[in-house]
Structures are given as C-alpha cells and as structure tokens.
Image (tube, rainbow, N blue to C red; front, side):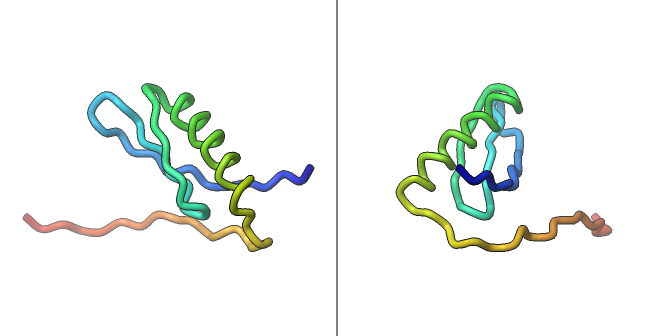
Length: 70
C-alpha cells in the first residue's frame, strides 16, 4: 500500500470546522479540528477508492499579506 500526503485547509463556520482537500476536492466537517481532519481523511480515502489520482507533485502553499483600506 502506497501512502500519499495531502493538504487540509480548515475554516471555522459557526460551531463547526470545515476541512477541504484542494488536491482532490473532498470536503468534510467536525466539531474540532481533529474531528474535521479525521472525517476529511476518511472521505478522501473513500473517494480515491473510486477515482484514483495519477501521480502528481505536491503543490507549494504559502501565505501573503494584503493591506485593506477601509
């Protein structure tokens, strides 16, 4: 069994955390960060059983600041 590393992007929406995997497009949620990521992992594993991805390189992810003038 091969192991691949994916990205989880999380955001807080009211009382839930929403987790998204940008490489695959899967989304899940949970009441904690850990629960949201665990649910996303399960959703992604199930998705990849049906729709395997070709071997691709991991994206480079960074952050940047934008000045907002009100």
